[in-house]
Every structure is written in structure tokens, then in C-alpha cells.
Image: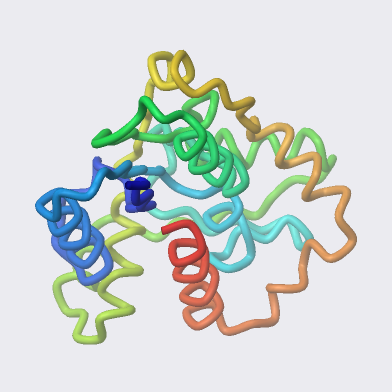
Length: 215
């Protein structure tokens, strides 16, 4: 029998919201099924959370930060999560395991801004969405998508550092650094193409598509 590889969501998230509850329900069902499994718990995708989809707009040197922006996150590249998924399939010894996945370093959102400023040679205009405002939105949300978006924003504000030492010992993926990702984004002429989309629908498409394609 093969193994079912499921890409879930960060294990650091604990507040209840629809996307998280759905992911956790799938995990529980998979574990109880008796089918050999691997569950991947990636933290924030740098491809999504440092993009115009959520107000991080390198082309126009603007950044929307959720919370104070000082808590570290081990931003991970979507392609690296795909590589982890491929490696766990290849190794027959890996089954019935969970892996927390992050990038090579834990950096705060403000540190991410400073990398873009350094490599792009432009000062960013930074705005903040306070945690108390996010909490109010979370408490008052009636739409499942909005509830999930704000829940993820609160997770971002809290930070999510992940020590990858042990995981890389088993799964030697060459992780993409935030600096490498930034250089690639700044060299891409189409960096701003998503800026014109309404971000809730665009973000929903990107996040759900990423989860579905890897799950």
C-alpha cells in the first residue's frame, strides 16, 4: 500500500476557524483510517504572505504588516514544500509521521521589509493592522473565508519560528532563503500583476490552490 501525503497547516495555529478546522479534521480522519500517511505542517508561504495578495507590494514599495511585525516567522517557499512532499514519497521508511516545515531562518515581517529595501534600493511605506483590530474582525466574522483569512493573519502576527535541524537531517531539501526569494521577485517584471486583483478573492484562490495542489 502507498502512503497518503497531506499538506496541512502550521501546527502552531490553535484558534478555531474554518480552514484550520477542516485541515485538522482531515488529519484526524487520515490517522484513524489505518492508511500509511505523512502529514506536512508548513508555516507561512513567503510566496503568499510577502506578496501583493496581502498588501506586501514590492513594485510600489508598500507593505501591509499584521501586528507589530516583530515576531519571527520561518517563511517557507511553496516550491520547497513541494520538494518535501516528493522526498517523503520516495523514502519507503517514512510513514505515519508529521513534519513541521519552515524555511532556513526565522525572520520578522519587518526584517523581510528591510531585505526588500536593501536589495531593491527603495524605502517602503509600511502600515500596520493592529492585533486588537484583527481580533475584533475575527470575533465578528460571519463569512467562513473572512474568518479564515483573519485567523491566518493573527497567526502571522504571533510569529511561527521552526527549527528545521532534525527534519533536514532526514529530508535534505535545499531551502530557499528569504533573500534568495526576494532577489528572484525583484528580478521578475511581472512582480505587480496581482496588485490589481481584489485581494480577498485573489488570496483565497492562491492559498486554497496551493493547499489543494499539495494536499
